[in-house]
Image (cartoon, rainbow, N blue to C red; front, side, top):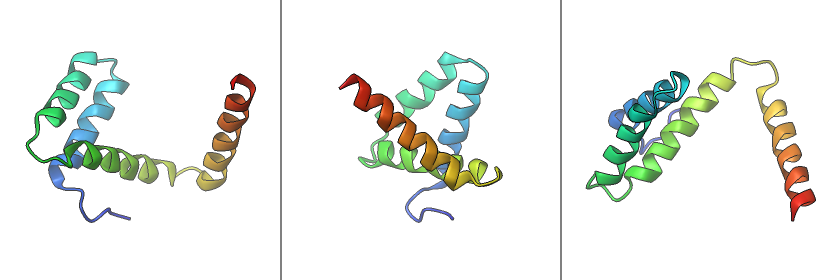
Length: 85
């Protein structure tokens, strides 16, 4: 599924951020965040988040029962938050 208001530049930023993270390149990640923050489009940050979500969902869909695994993780994080709150 592609999110309608996510543009090619948002998807490219998401890929660059992910690659920077995977390679441990904090400068690359910082460059993406700075570029997004300085974008004149007020929706740039939201678009980056949506592009990252779109990308993560695409990769996760390759895993067996991805939705079930994500739901289990959400419940586990909620349980952990409940123990700290």
